[in-house]
Image 1 (cartoon, rainbow, N blue to C red):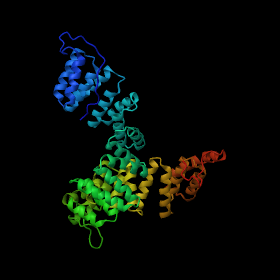
Image 2 (cartoon, rainbow, N blue to C red):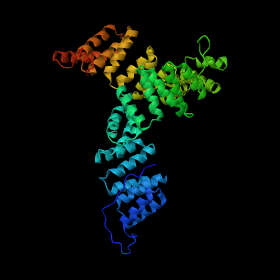
Image 3 (cartoon, one colour):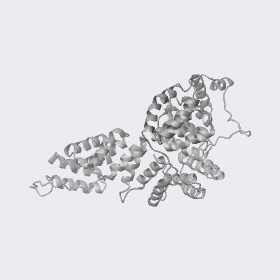
Image 4 (cartoon, rainbow, N blue to C red):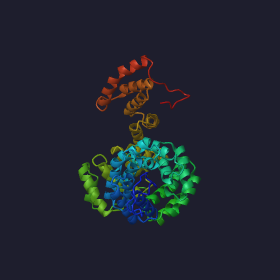
Length: 474
């Protein structure tokens, strides 16, 4: 519900021949606000509408009427009311913020963004609009702008826990874990029982090797789960990562999470199905395999392995379906790094790079030698133009698989994008020396086009150089 966003006393004067306020729009409006503050929304609405009848161009009354309509869940009328208020008073931020809030509630983020930006333009410290726009941009995957907006919103001395939590999430998504931890501490100062903040902080503590502190947060989080299997899965996974398998098992059992048992030999899971169905599921024809896997899943509805197989099968042809299967697999086996890596790769396919980077970073923290996670994480970072971090991943990958020639190409283009032309030229030349014309022809052509320009830039002294004193300079 939209809160009462303001207390307004318009500077209007009207004759009131009867002395009872029945023809004075300001007095009618004030009566509406009084009823509104008591939660008497229907009565408040009557007064606002009477005020508008007396003075049709009463922007403040239109706005408060729209707020009351939201409270009464008459949302289409509220939308019309906010727009009417904007029409009457174009330079007033509050109806823009009110309409933006309503549109966010209706899952119309793109439309909401326009009105929220206008509210901030008119009133840079409109903290409601800043909070909502930060959330909209975070959901859109624009973590950089979301963080800027969240930082502006938390300048409000009365900033709620929710915006501090969003700030922490954006800081974590942009790999600033130290700042995220500070923001999470703010959340928990305001709201000590905030489950999301406890889980986020526990995961950060685990990544920093502070397992004891993480376990403290997980103990506080446990009573707050209340049958929420998604958060229960996070608690289980965090206990596993913190080296507390007994606690992980206990929570999984209490919350009814099915942790699929593996055979004693460590082999695959048993699947109920005919030999023909299982052969078809392993077919080299993707269409046949997908159909067979879906048939097997109807017989084995709790098989995380089949869900993950379907996630992989749909990754390039239907990314949304792939994501759904991987999410279902992770809900059953939250500590399986292969399923989480597959989910990250599906996010990459869907071009949801910030989310992919966040997931894959967590996988690597739990399974440092997971090559697929490193490879996908490198791709996500590269697409996010976080070239310095991508180079660190490429170095790891190159050490693990020195014969993978295409890594030289990505290393070269990352240095090139950072303006480190000397390092880029060296990597380009290494790539050309080892590249195969059959498999790398596209990259070879691009490099040959780039080489004359980069050599000229080096001759002119252009670009930047990495130094030991400042290796992270962009």
